[in-house]
Length: 341
Image (cartoon, rainbow, N blue to C red; front, side, top):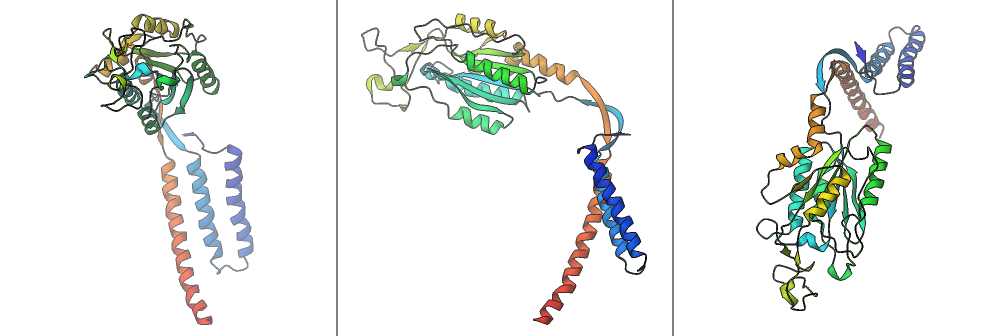
């Protein structure tokens, strides 16, 4: 038999000692009144405490095998929220951001139990959601993501989130070094900043897997001004205009796969282009997370048959007995109180 206590040994020992010494003391006091019945009641109560202590020790019998949790992972989602995120060349002229949302939830479904964090970038990089296992919070966070308003944009770099990502990865490794850290970068690779993008590298060992996911087409897509509805009445029918041509044409955003592949090389993860209707399984197989998950599933741990429930059930029955006795005593006292009134 093996024990896996849920409380420190010293605390369990103290509780056990009190539950034994107290009824012994009551036994000495009740020796003068053997018919009082108090000793029996205190023995029952001490037995209840001892059963709870036994359950807290978590006794078990070794045998069998158990699989290790397959998704004890920290997953960082780096999402492009520049204006090009709403370029309408995903699926049936849907915004790219729609594909990003679908893929994020697909990744969450493939990695149940993992901790997810969302980082977004446009002119600046920010943490939208810290690491959490709450997929409802993740879905809410990505559902309200909106691109930066064009008037406020001063140009964006596709690697501006590199420093923030490295800080978050370092903090995660420091707090939980045993958890693999995965990075998913979701964007189109379009650089609108005048300065050349810096390499998006992380220190060795910070990234254990992930992928760079690319969205968009070589033909490009038009972009509605953030806040414009399907039938915007502004210039260009609500679409951002190309000011460089002088012809008042709608601006087009084109995917830059070469730059995305460069980011993938910097991060040490594969690059995968995503289009509407692409299955999720091949994407996960190309990325390292799938291999990490399968490796974890293949590692068998020594199993054991838990016995704590036997003691917990006995303690519950004794506790139920105490409740019945308390109700009886309350009913006996109630008429006396009413008679006095």
